Amino acid sequence: MATKRRLILEAIGARLAEISQANGYETDAGARIYIGEAPDLGEDDPDAALAILPGDEEPRWQGENVSVIWPITIAAIAKATIDGSYLVVEAVIGDIKRAIEQPDRRLHVNGIPLLNHYLERGAVRGLEREPEHQSVGATITYDARFTEGWGTP
Image (cartoon, rainbow, N blue to C red; front, side, top):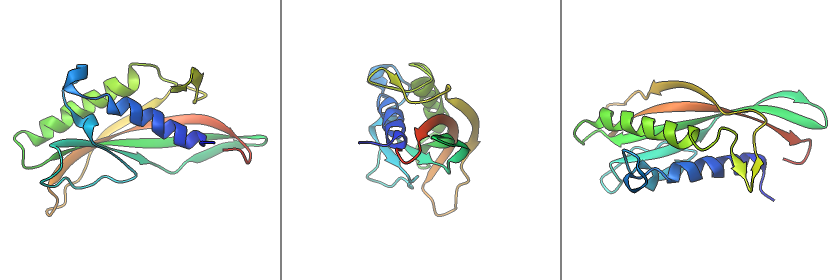
């Protein structure tokens, strides 16, 4: 049985995978999604991609259940070599906001909400670019608040 954390990542990934121009978004960044790493895009990669970066969860209450706040950062990454690369990053950030925030804010699986509360959006932050990196980017963080049973994640 999948853990709630995994189901949350899968639900976010499914929403991000919808990001394509064919679906009415500004970019096709949903064609390449990384989980757990934000890679430096190379020659063989698309012009833009996404990365889901789970943060450290923060348990708030423990008993029969554990109440958790889990920050999940989504990175918008674009090749620095394309024209207007940071403008592409801004377009991807807009696409992320539409994909994550429009359907519903509680992330559902088979009609059952995964979260106790709505997703909460944090700040958009630019990624610092190392001189040897070929990509530029920005991140946006969402806090997922959920409860899992003690010993039954």
